[in-house]
Amino acid sequence: MNEKNRLILVIDDDSALLAVIQRLLKSAGFEVLVAVDPIEGVRLFKDRWRAVDLVLIDFLMPIMRGDEVLERLQCLRPEVRALMMSSCNREMISSVLKRGFRGYIQKPFTRQELLEQVGEAIKSAVEPGQTPDTSARTALA
Image 1 (cartoon, rainbow, N blue to C red):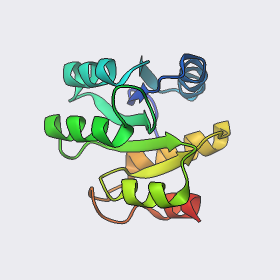
Image 2: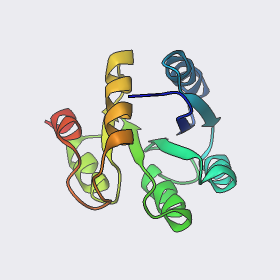
Image 3: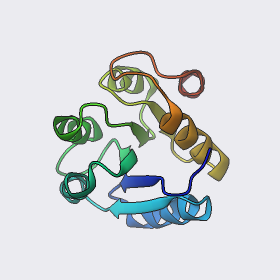
């Protein structure tokens, strides 16, 4: 995968984790935008919606949950690619994935897990509401 010129928006209320994710993605060659709260994340997406290749969204945040953030992003661009990040239980994960997430990254995760899920989500042709790709299903098992 050619990461050059791929733009990823990361939305997470944990500023320390946000900085780590940003550093990991940049070291892999991605351009990265970060937002420490959902409102800022939606604003950044609204400003750059044509350029954003993928959005990583924490599920449990103050103000609104990750699935609510995704709904707002889908109003701007229905085919937006998004991965959910969380330490939620499996029942919650499977119901949320059906709302349009391309996959799930279980916290805590390794650099390799992050980059594999990001790569799969970017090249994924799965339409929102359908079953995610094989690697995302594996992460749910």
